Amino acid sequence: MRRRIISLSVVTVVLVLIFSLSALSLKISQIEFDLNMAAGTSGIFSFQVRNPDTTPQHVIIYLNDWLRHPRGGHIFLPPNSAQWTMPRQFISGEEFDLIYEVSFRPGERIRLESTYRTASPTTEGKILGSIALDPAYIGIIPDIPVAAGIVMISRIIEAISPAGNSFTVRLRIRVNENFHGLVINETFTRNVQVTPLESADAIFTTVDRSNVDWLTVMPSSFTLAAGATQEVRFSVNIPYWASGMYWGMIFVRGSPRPAVVDGVGVLAVARFGVKVYTTIRGTEVISGRAIGIDRPTSLNPLTFLVAFENTGNVQLRVSGWLDIINVRGETVLHIPISNFPVLPGSMSIFEVIDQTGEQLPPGIYQALVVFDYGGAALVGMARGFRVR
Image (cartoon, rainbow, N blue to C red; front, side):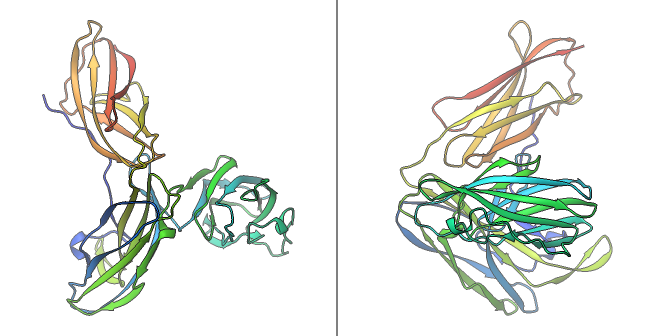
């Protein structure tokens, strides 16, 4: 009996407006670079951008950070950012704080350019307060303007570590009018380590292993004639202290093009993400663990939610299986788990589904999920359940 898993997909093309892939008006020769380099070295790489359309296009190249969402898909962040997302209703008069610690390498000078946006009504603005992580700014409370908008966010630098390379920062949020949904981005001039200390139930996201600081792309923009091809080159400069894997994305964005969505003519923008992984040769740590298997979320079809965590410092390609074992110790179902990627420090949560339509007879069973992540041993987890 053959069964399959609904697995995570890797999406490398993102459209500002979704439309038929046949309407894409740029072609990219390579959408992923998996580079293995030594610490302290550099290299130059390239890919081709082609315009198969009959009209010229203006192309913009820029860098972004990204993560895979544990349940699939991608999360995109401005380079060197920490993000707090709060998809809830806010009531006028609310006040609360977000507190985080930010650490960086000794001798670096870090500045901030930070923004927020609300969902409904849609507004955006800048965070008030100190714009640099500097001892001179500790304890300074920014002036709050009279006309502060529907929400006011101010930054206070509260403390510094004895070594001078770690600061505690407080973001104070004051709600002036009712609104829904808030996203805060703290964007730093270099990659830093941000640790949330108080998140007020916000969803916190950052990329600890970004390599965008090491990438330089040339050219950053150009115009492609109809049928023409342009080489895009990027250099990678690995610092001497690096270890494990780091990653970033080079975005290639074309001109707005006419498209039809649900029978309506619109202008759509194609945006391609070229992933750049850099693994530091000789520093790889391969480690992972199973962190969850729930009781069946459905018996028809038989469905389990499982989770795997990458506890090492390089990306893992994980596969495995899920066995259903009866009280006599017999394996009555064997469901293969297709290969899926997990970034270091991340987890993958997904459904394993038996597609045969067969029903388990009443009884007590054990579900055993086993993962092969390329390490010295397999890892797994079991969960008992009953079919009535």
